[in-house]
Image 1: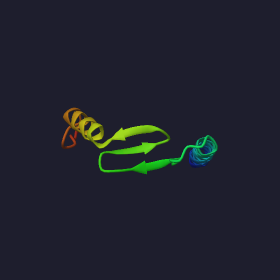
Image 2: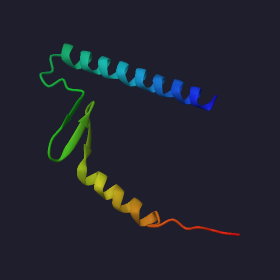
Image 3: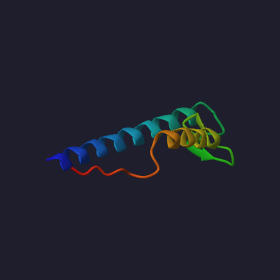
Image 4: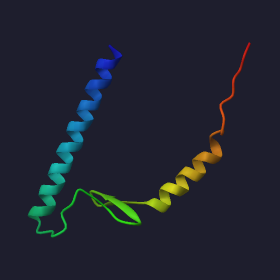
Length: 78
């Protein structure tokens, strides 16, 4: 039962993402934007629907997260 619910949620998310991407592309291309791309990347960032995600920010986030998460797992035996 849990797998069916998870599959339905994943399919719904995929359909929502696809629909949003199509609407974004159509809106940008009909607005006479010469650079109507849903996803693009270069050496310093990834752009997804006008949101810029810089590699530098991702590395900073991973560094902060690695400071909190332990490097090895701990076992507790009773």
